[in-house]
Image 1 (tube, helix red, strand yellow):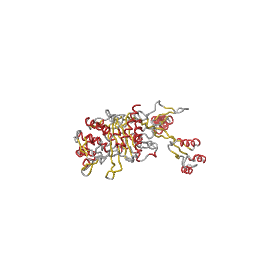
Image 2: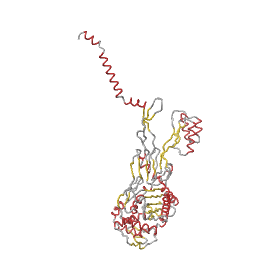
Image 3: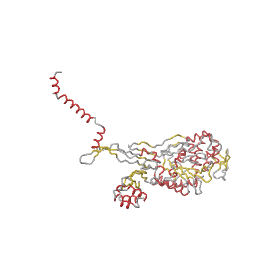
Image 4: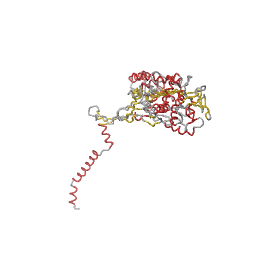
Length: 561
């Protein structure tokens, strides 16, 4: 290259200018159109941000819409030891425990800790007021509102409703079973910062909007109150270890009341004991005794192992294989009894004769079809299967024992569900306790509706059993349940408690199961008094009068509703 050309190239500034302009343009486009995520986030926080909205756990209500469980706030109290003065501690004496004051004094005035809890969820108003006076007079004390579950009727329906832990997570009952539905995640809204003003919402409506979830039960809280009042009184008067009452609409399977004794206060953790926490209606297996006889007799009639026009000779005791079957009063021999008479007199000897005839495998299949030995489909946790021995284990006296309600274990819910098939004309209904469940999006995620599982009795067999149960109340062991308020039918039960491979002579379970009105049943109810210590042991003297009291007061509710 000549010297002249080299000088011309050095003297031209446009090449550098174009290069510089190109670099600047690319940089500007990159910064504005493809910024780093960290830069975007920081810039957005200067002008707008997402804010979590406060949310509450869902409501549980009864069939009439009465709130049973709601969410509320309750004060808790803490302290910042670094801000405390000696005067503050002196004012706190008598409010805060001496042990806690010593712990606070050890870190007072230092920066070892800036936060210490004084008391969580203070429910007592007088105690809360004392703490609030400390907060008012010193910036070292802190009041914090914490969410908690409020059970509007205290102990009422506690086993059904359940309770939550300190983090508002369901631990029992409906609270546990429907925990995911009742949980209400916080929503969000977008706020913008305007120059010289408070933040304002960017949109009129919040994003991720939530509504309060609602679980509607089939139970009526007024009916529940009546049931608990009479059941708990009977259990306490007779020194019972446990007791249950469950009421059902036999035509739909809808549960109307469910009570278990002993009970607890879901807002008082000190009342939570192993015995009181158990919802015996769904979780306790027990030998049903004579309340099982109508169901077994229905199976025998359907299978052809008994006829309605038979006569049975019933001595005071009957030798069966390796043992004896005795009447509940071992000194009584009923002599000749009709098939209906077996229920009216509650004859163990007569029912045992049918049990001996029955084919074991088919009996097992029929009882299994009625729900025994199976987990009942109910919207509650802790449901037990009970015990229905396999037919190959029905040796010796076992078939006769099964016929009188011994040698197997049922839950109260299983028994009342099976009896419902007799009361409604032969259909085994699936029991349910939740009418409707709505989640935090306002969606109905569940609807409880009548569901026929299977037909287990013919209408003729069911009608004959119902008629015989009416005679039990008019002529037999259930006379103490009879009332002028309505015509009812039922069956008593008295069962010994198995203990160490034998039956205890001191521990009994007394029960009564019945339905009303007799001509067009709307209600089916079971009352069980477990292991009374008052000296009374028979279902006719313990459970039947309690049943009657409940029926009569329920009639008053219907009259005034």
